[in-house]
Image (cartoon, rainbow, N blue to C red):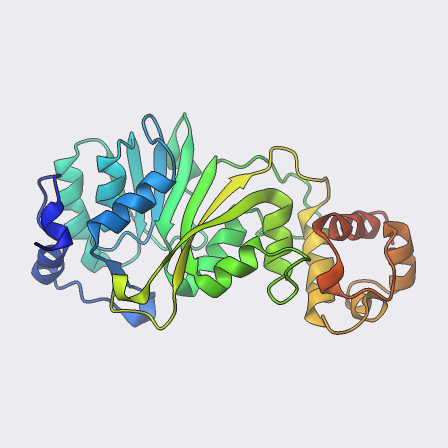
Length: 294
């Protein structure tokens, strides 16, 4: 008996859905479908109890994870899908769960789901397309803020995010200065604003088609009160520091300020240190020093 035969939601097996709707995965869209219902159920459960929760899902494809989220009790799922071929299959799921699935025909990059989620707790749960996964995550962390804007509300509109990434990206998300091989701008941003944990790995054989890399499920929970600084300044100093990560900060930070020695002194950091040695709090201090005119 196949894993799909264990379905209890009354909907057809996913392989049948894919065949019927001609949903061959497209590499250009970063599509890798999950047919293992045990695995999609595990991902849904990793997001915690979903009763009364609205879930935002990106890239549902034929709807394997969508079905798992609804079966797990999500009050409502807002599924954002840019592939028009998948919309009829998702419409069938919506008909099976009346009033609980909203399918949005849109590109999630640059799309703001906040007007759609209503009141109550909201969580993001998604098997993200690899080609846009990091862009989506940094956007949800507020990194689309630019210039001198200070209206950067935090905590965000979502109370947690349970997301699939390539394993190497997951390692960068959770890395800090103790993991210098993986620590970088992404680790600083995620460590500053969230508590991020790798929950478990997913083998390539779980997907159709199988990718060439192992995937990981990452759970991120927003920090209610991250150390204060402007995100635009934090991005500026991390971009400079990690852009030349093998150089000492007194050299690499010349890309962010005309006087890096003064900036470092204001932040209380040694100029001989390198980017991968500086904890998140140190980069926040640099960002605050930059805002102060360092």
